Image 1 (cartoon, helix red, strand yellow):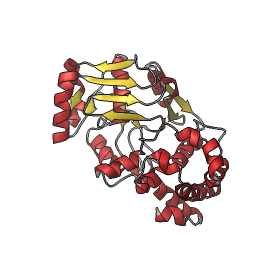
Image 2 (cartoon, rainbow, N blue to C red; image 1 turned 60 degrees about the vertical axis):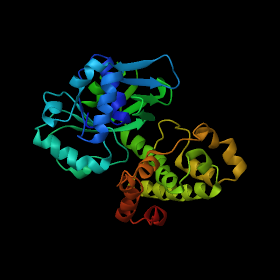
Image 3 (cartoon, rainbow, N blue to C red; image 1 turned 90 degrees about the vertical axis):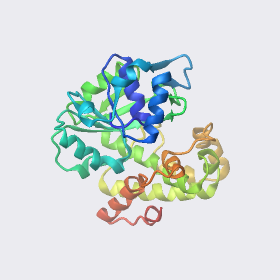
Length: 318
């Protein structure tokens, strides 16, 4: 696993608990030095807000063997590499993998579509995924918290890649749901449609629930989703939301544009309880982690619009 973010840490801790040997590759930095000190004192914990009694733990004694800043040590003899960085770092990750002659399957736990396309031909099996859950990394406490039930924490892998089925079985044996799905392209574009809220939330300066309660923000979101659907239709892509398959893109747009009372009886139920929550892009912007992933979300819609001759002024502006 390249870098211990929430999603990478989530799967790394699950695999560690299941008895697999896991190595996290981290950067030398004051942030890592502080985290290393904490982990050596308390270990690393994975919890679930919906199941308070469940946890996966990496004991302090295991930390030195599981974490390294040395790519050669991290990548020696690996069966799989899980990449959980922001997509802005993919080329640097790819170059590191090439320098260390990696030929095993490399799994990208990232947002967007066409994740591996910019890498060109690669000597390893590049597996794109769709992560259908949220996890929060509380670094000060040495904990990662899954914010929903484990049965709802799903990972969809591209079934076109031969190693996807085997990896899905390995992950299923850790207690979460993983599936190599032949409808991967539809599910991946459906997740991109959902992620188009990220930039709106980041620019609003608000948390998700109150932002979505304001008609103006919903209308902006409706416009960028509408453009995305037009682009997908021209490209022959039919997005599928794996979490709410009954909510089509057209219905989602209609509900975003609907009167306030309709919103409160429908979509508001999906965001209820997220009053203090922000999208990952909003968190990045607040923390000064730039560049953000905007080019791989709204930017992807803008690029596809140019390719297929569909105007995307709202996504261009965002």
